[in-house]
Image (cartoon, rainbow, N blue to C red; front, side, top):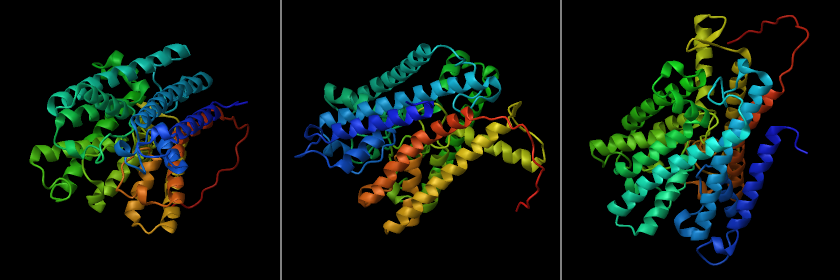
Length: 440
């Protein structure tokens, strides 16, 4: 009997991964002879359910139409389930703890409130289908009119990439992902828009629908998410464009508008979608490191994005600012941040660092790849991004299992950890004498 909500989340997603693995092992799912090996099916199923996008085989050529449909279904279930369960856990936490200590999953947002579960589920479904449909129509028209694809093929390409984009999955039906469309704004911009919207999180989308033109009425959670996301997109675009501007393997051969579009696209994807219109294997080491930072931060809470979430990152930033200024309390946008929320943000961030470092050390011991390549792959898996320098398929079986574990941990870890911390709040009836260890 699952007493804790976090247990139900883990078991539910593990069950989805298992079902997906069994379906992908069927001979019907593979384009070639025979069924897919168990490890290939497990890796692909986990990547789809956890909306990551890492792959050990070429999606458009290895999987049959049925196999691709299974992957698409797993992406939709994973994205919809994650948004729903994260929102519902936020409601449960709010009901148990009151409005004073809302978590980053649905932090201090009156747009969700504590209404009935059915309304929340329907709201998530409507938002998902709306943005996926709009993106699919735009992409279908572009494939149909701009690339002379037959209508059926164009519609399939549009639908697949729209669902993959909104759910921040990063699976594409082209061997080179989206590198063939690097300078096409009619492909790149709709996909980037769907990624950004899906990564903001349902609580933010729900509130923006009501108060889009009234930022003064936004909750603290929405302000933190929207403004931090906008800042990271701008800084990421400037960084990638500057770092790769003359690189002959990436932005170098493009004209100025193409470079700016590609720089923006590569700034959006670490948020955490996983599409790429440039070859990450040809990027400079500095660009890979900066991308690691963007992937680690991720997107908004209670959405389809991964990472430690922008609210966690920016709250820790405000903690540092308060400490540098010598202020006794932490404030953000005219609101005081509670001590418990600060501890939760610190716990999520440090445990995430620990998981990434441990996995990177393990992969360095069992492979011969360079440190920057291994670190990039590990961060991408944990943050459920899906970007790769091209070494995923070349990892040994044990290394691929490490990434499978990281994808599952990275997708469910923050949700289950934050909800578990919130539901385990205890009141200490006494205080011990204060200690003053030396810091620094």
